[in-house]
Image (cartoon, rainbow, N blue to C red):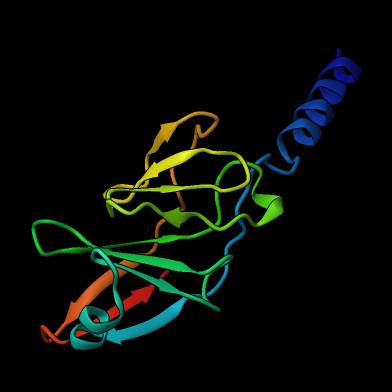
Length: 135
């Protein structure tokens, strides 16, 4: 009985410690932009930021005046590091490698083959002037 229990325990440990599929790695993000700079550089209330996150950041000003931020790395085959591209509407973004679409309001998948939401980061407005992105 002891041998069966030990074998079962080892099996459970090895199967639960595997690498998660379609995993976007954790990276340190600490980025700031002023509201004025955001307004000047953004297109359709969407600002693309290179050299941050896994594949860059996409910062979006929502219709209610808040901000959300996502990693540009698509959750469809993230090992390919395909960068989502905002659509002209500013409402969705498309993964050019798979054709998947994501909402730019909450990062949720909108069109297959997307199944997972985009990776989001924390965003705060400091002093009504500075947009700060962290994780």
